[in-house]
Length: 308
Ligand SMILES: Nc1ncnc2c1ncn2[C@@H]1O[C@H](COP(=O)(O)OP(=O)(O)O)[C@@H](O)[C@H]1O
Ligand SMILES: [Mg+2]
Image 1 (cartoon, rainbow, N blue to C red):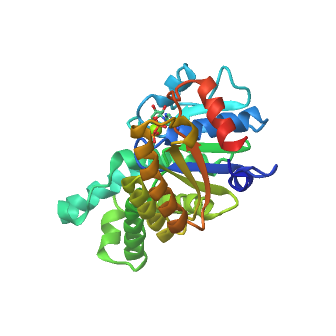
Image 2: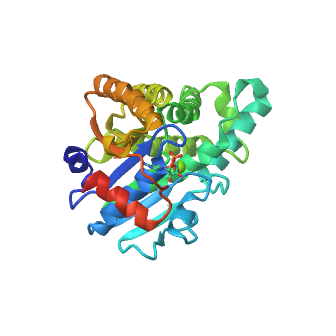
Image 3: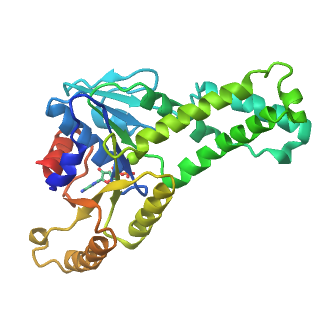
């Protein structure tokens, strides 16, 4: 347990705190995010857990249906609500606008001029931005955080929007094309969306509003993934503040078992590497448990191990 990490995650009474848990698949993001959300709710903070994972993890863990239309109160946990944003229910107005503008440009200049953006990620991000725009409660915990790479991909169409808008302002021929017909206002709307995106980015860049954590295992590939996520996020001005090292093997569980000893020895070299490479980040560790973390009881146990 690391009190320093907990301290930067604690919300002050006036502003909503956003907590992100990113990292490689299977390292324990959902476990850490949900355990953290339950811990905060149990300690009296109005908390929401938001998942952008298309699988049903949240519903399974809390044994109740958690959908994407509205936050639902979690039955057994006072102060906790859940929301599962489903990227395939693309309700994003932004998506419709962008598709409209893109098809018009393609129609005029040919398809190779405009690349099709990643629609699912876009829809997810659109809802994600809406969430950051309307702060609600003390703590919002995001399971499945956008990494540096996906954020950069998502920013690209906005660059396009800015570029095209500039053409319009400069009175180029494009202006006439885009300002006629059904999509007359699309460019202005895209600009509006770009501003929304910038607002969301500001929240992510603000160290006191957002704590971006990365989850990893003491193994080679998660360490490298952590490094590249830190680099990618840094390019967008988003600092990673916390590192949660999962599934460490405690000495007391080894009991002379050679297999466990070998794994623990290997972990030791990686844990040293993590300490050295990421020395500026606040770190906490969660031991490898003798059970999975798939219900409320085990989530509370993890929360206690993490935060006391
Ligand atoms: N410290 C741990 N000890 C034992 N099992 C764990 C631990 N952390 C996570 N798990 C289990 O590992 C699996 C993957 O974790 P999960 O949180 O779903 O990863 P992710 O969301 O990063 O894909 C889950 O079945 C979870 O219960
Ligand atoms: Mg997950």
